[in-house]
Amino acid sequence: MLLILRVFKKSFLFIACIIISCSNETKIHSYSGQALGTSFKILYASDQPLKNIDVLTDSIFTEINKSLSTYISSSDISKINDDIDSIKIDAHFKKVFNKSKLIWKSTDGFFDPTIGLLVKAYGLGPKNDSKIPVNLDSIMNLTGFGKVSLKNNFIIKEKKGIYLDFNAIAKGYCVDIISNMLNNRNINNHLVEIGGEMVASGKNLVTNNYWRVGITDPLNPSSNNYIKKIQLKNSALASSGNYRKYIIDNQTGKKIVHTINPKNGNAFNTNVLGVSVIAEDCITADAYATSFMAMPIEKSIKMISLLNNIEVMIIYNKEKSEVEIFSTDGFDRLVLN
Image 1 (cartoon, rainbow, N blue to C red):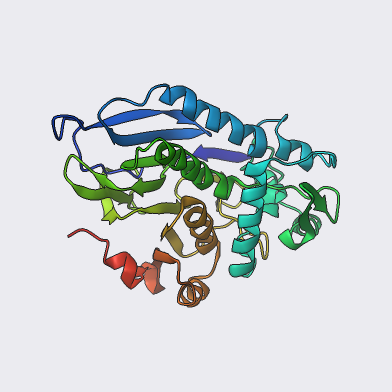
Image 2: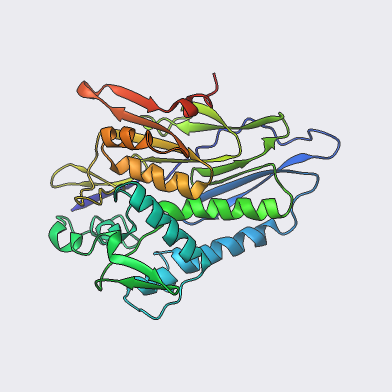
């Protein structure tokens, strides 16, 4: 028997602004709601509220769900996971797939969207249909992004039963799409956040500073304390931590976490407590944040030194449960005193 615990992602946002007029014309407007199984918030500077922002954002969420949601049985990805091979993918699916391939290669396979069967088996998927203990041998035979390819807008799987799951990258991609929508309407000063993943564009014109946000303390996620407060300069931030979603196996007492190691199929806590990644876009930040949660800390630090397009902070347990923080110089320069 499993005790199911859901620790939903608390918003990472610490917004250093008040929604008031900052000049005779420009104001900071706010729009928020629920989508993609979590909350979202949009702050933007404009002399008038964006007309039909609800319709514009809802249409984006609908498109993303129709293409990439494993929680909707009629979505393209659900049909592909059911081994229907006649599904021609759309532009959203193609962009996410191609980006996933790049991250999969650059992380030596630690980012892998084919862990969907493991997610389901551990009870972390759409139907909570856990099968503890998990038969890793049979599932790992259907795991590995190298077994999936894209040809003429169709997904080719080497074996039937391979199950794709882009939940570790789709929210970040959706943040980018909404940010692009605002930029296309000349709303260039904005902050878009979905479930803690965010893009900051321009400045907060109330304070005339770059957007300031807080990163949740993974050791105390229910509090209003932030382990770091940073400013984002036309960049994206994604964070990952196993305190958000997990289950407890009553037979062993082990915490089964949502970050699964695609190399061995394990879903048990490691010494990595939380990861935050800053990148040019949120799809990149989201994918790398997940990767470094699954990767051994030593391998992450070595890999980060070879990557030029991201800044990273990793919070982890060292010997004797001492908490350590690794961060790149570029990340540290964005930390507020």
